[in-house]
Length: 159
Image (cartoon, rainbow, N blue to C red; front, top):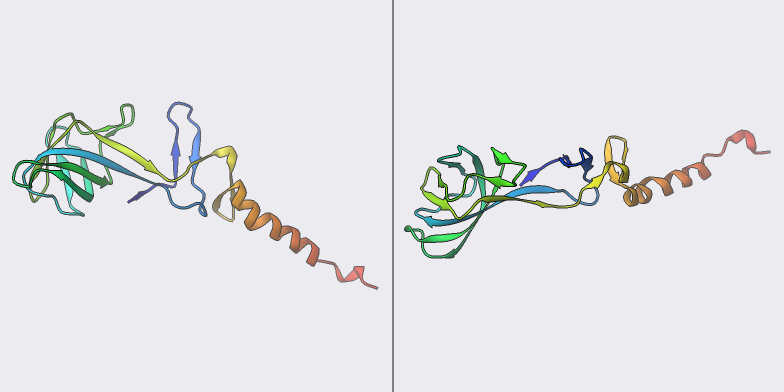
């Protein structure tokens, strides 16, 4: 799956980050297909015949028909190229998509799906090169820092 360290909201220009302890965030493409002749192989690169857009197959779901020209279902892909950020589309409507093993037709457009949680800049804290949300920063560092301050007593204070 495609992992990205941060994202930018195009409307506001505000940066968003992931918290290392909340779990990884990733994006993937969901491509509805029809008229599938031969199933693509997981890990294989597919290419749109008209748009030239490429992606790597991550998972395949056959919903109806058979891989002899009537297959219909959904492909999940990573590493998409030529993704249109304005419309959220990959490829062109009803575009033929080819792979080294065969071809199928997009049933509409491919769509980007984002999973995980992103935090805006003002809700994320960077410490020791790691981005953490406020809650995880408090759990990991704030209480530890308080305890270290209590333990770090100068020997000159003793009599």
